[in-house]
Length: 114
Image (cartoon, rainbow, N blue to C red; front, side, top):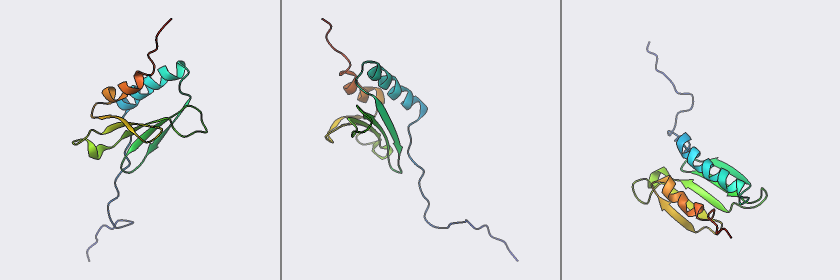
């Protein structure tokens, strides 16, 4: 008599969720903190999905996000895995280096002093 190991739910292997790494979140939350102290942003949300991770930025809690920072690991070799998307759905910046991609949002922090 032979025993074979059975899996509780046989079937196709499900992929793990995509999430932001600690160093990625540190860069994003550093920018977020500066924009909150400037009074531009007020709330955020993080979504970890099967094929991408999304950091949504809100001006007010009950609104749609004004910016989305998305991580698509499948696009790592092509267009870059990070993208900043505006409220209207346009891709503002895309690339493989998160700090470079987030510079498009840092320009909004720079103001002329009178």
